[in-house]
Amino acid sequence: MNEKNTIKTKVSMPSADQLIGELKALMTDAEALIQATEGHLDGAIGTIRSKALETLTDVKESIAGYEDILTDKAKAVVEDADNFVHRNPWESIGVAAGLGLLIGIFMRRH
Image (cartoon, rainbow, N blue to C red; front, side):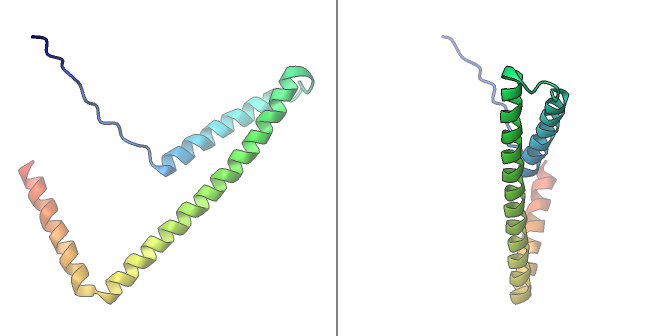
């Protein structure tokens, strides 16, 4: 009887900040490449260069909008948490204590 051994790897999803950082690095490299081809405005290289400049501009605008959305959402979450803690201080203390207890139990087992 053949048994197949499967290896499961844990793949972690990159965070939004990591993705934005990688996109910015890619854009920097693309800008350097575009600057290196400044003297080639005619023919296929010129066409590709102008298309790349358009795409870079669009991506920069999209990233700026995405960063604004993430910042706004983070501010809203912090504000909601702050309001909850101020409205329900004893519940907040209970939740924090319960989470601390659970984390302590899990850490002790490992």
